[in-house]
Length: 451
Image 1 (cartoon, rainbow, N blue to C red):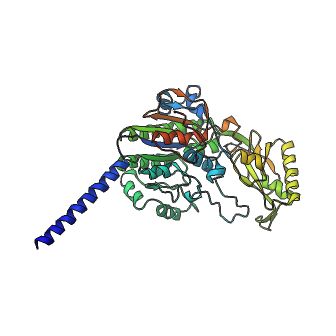
Image 2: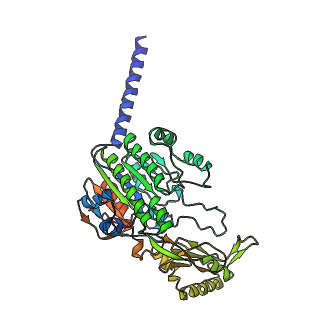
Image 3: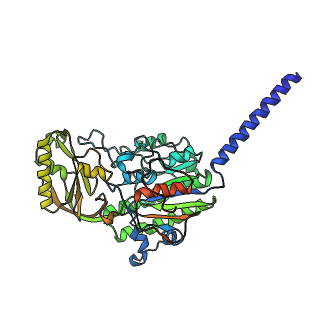
């Protein structure tokens, strides 16, 4: 009996030691000897909104405080194309789209078989991300709506995902979110909004969830994303009264998240954006121009049934994909269509496929078209190919357009105050932030700006 008791006591001791060891490992993942990192993206934030706030009479004290207390870029030269999903993936990998794999918002789908699917899935990212290297180092991670995070190896993950924009999407979203996380956080943060709700009100709800994650889980890396500014800029244009009103509301959310993060201890707090904005009032329907050349075939209901060349639209630029690379007649027809559009003033620049790949975008394209100022792409397959439209904001133009410049502000542990970084490359953001956590991104093409 005594021997059995001793064995039981030994097992109890081993179990206790194992539990203590596990607790130590978990504590080390959130160890106090290094800062945490909060990376917040405000989609469509132009740097001049913050750096020239007085000129615009903007009340954005929290964003202005970042520039005063930390390091900031005069502009961030974007990737090709300057749209949300490729840019956000560059921001967490330090690699260009051609290397990281998220080469547009949506996969090329000329016949519509994917039903407007986007690059939602992290498995399409071909290189390590910030959350990958953080997890490898034993750090806990969290996410609220960062693009291309469905299925990501993030400790507490609320990915961006929708499908049909119906109530059933909420069920899909819960399946992709860390099990039980939404139900836990909704007890204090309220109902989580659908991913396709791109309003400032929805951003306020997402900020509540991000703050709750910081309070309850204390991750060493938190990613968060706000969509409302971009949506207002698309509807009303950059620098509109509605745009500035949205930004002033978002500024309060920035302050709330920074305060929540800094309650956990030493923190690096970064605000980024994915692109800037241009104002447009003309629409260019590239696929209609290609249809007129006989390169796209429609059925009696106007649906694409066949194609030899088609445009892959990204707002202010597009890749022209030729189905058969050896189809010289199709390439010649594309060039005729583009020559007409260039003569009409809608096309500013045409890149060859190799030229586009050298800029890091649109692998496999025959040509890449950059639109002229004031123009945006449309999806009509009816005449005319160029038409006057409503005044709206657009991005996606070639990265050489300075209106496409994104924003970067970073403050906190180890970041010098009032450090002007000049105009930087978007690929520099991820390695700079990784270094603040003592991490290295193996596929990064950028550099640590604070080294």
